[in-house]
Image (cartoon, rainbow, N blue to C red):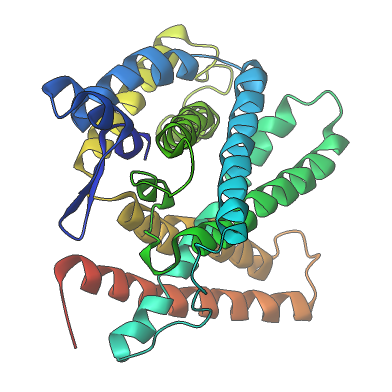
Length: 321
């Protein structure tokens, strides 16, 4: 997503300029591939080589602050345009015209699921807390903070752009907003959120590396893990960073990425696997009610996301009813 913000993106055969190609024009060094390479080499890779998640506390705090910078500017622009009467009344109900419109409603579910699944980070953070009982208030505070940012961004983003709101709302900030210093605010919004995404990546990557190592080297000695073996740590880190860079260059849109991962891996991590563990109940602590709810959760998750995958595929390949 940071590559789209800096180098621009295409939506419905329309090019939305990024920060760099908006400033300097289209050159080889403002193209997405080169920008992602420089970002990976000089920002993502160095942060990915920290061995302890506690080392990322300052960059994470900066990332949260940058998210609020984006939100404050978005809210301020929206209120300014509301007061001068330049915002049209938005449509609050979906426009249902055919069956494809119904299927498209399900594409929002994986995005929401993706936004709130943080299970993979909880254990790595908990291991480094001096008092493990602090993990519950940490999780609650994180969910509340994330919810506030998500909800306010959705409300004010839709109020500001209305029917023109894109799946990646940052791509909307390439036009004249009709207020003083519009171009400056556009750049501040996009740059702040681009750096926010870059600084969030190492936290997610930390869990990815830890779980990948556990999966690939499960049969090795417990005393030899990705943190204790320098060679393994470096090789796994370089391999995963390279894989992420290659995958980022082949993704046509972050929207499709979030939709498909949200409808598959994220649903399994967030709903199917926990419910399956509850049904199996290896410690004999789950009640019949818990098991029934777990079965319902699995059925709803599978059903809704089969529809979401179908809708995503239909949209991607131009399938129509």
